[in-house]
Length: 245
Image 1 (cartoon, rainbow, N blue to C red):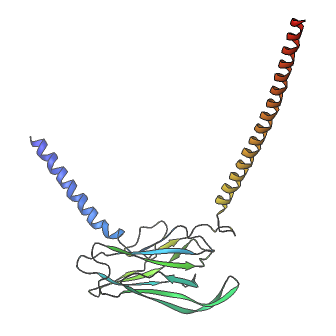
Image 2: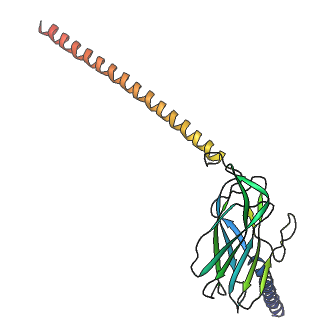
Image 3: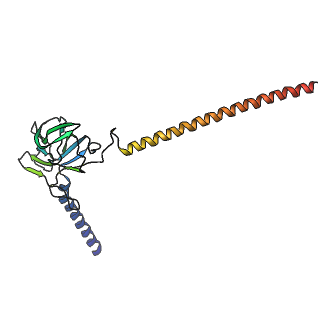
């Protein structure tokens, strides 16, 4: 009986401890992040979503500011309209002009700001995605680091600006990081996709060749059958005539 009570207390204590760990670790996952819709290939264009969760129980998110990297500037940034939100795209002069599709660009987007138009914003217990079409993506880096400011209706500002470092624990307020995939070929498809296409064409060619060989064989066999059949009929007629004679 005593052992049973001790086991029950240990189980209860373990459950409470586990709940506390979850409660403490949950905020680490609820931060502003960025993910591509599909692929974000180097040198190409992509649609990305900045995901903004509300971490407060008594305030809503009414403003989101995303600062773009200056070491890898993006010349083209187009926001998607979102009901209930106003958006502002800010451009800045570049110290070193970019060349995009043979055209020199002397300014790039430095910041995009979304502001709740109706004052409601992102309510507690919800999140909002803020889509952007961006490009051309750089081809000399594996990632783009953005910095975001999240403003709540009670005027609290959370700064998601700490750059995650490889081999280290995630910082308390990590900045959104967009991972870039390998560059695609000139036709808009990846090397793997092109290789798959080549293999498919080869297989189709082999199938057509096999079908052609099979058809030819069938025709030859059919012709032989007709000849054999005709010979059989002729022999039968000849044999009949001999019997009659």
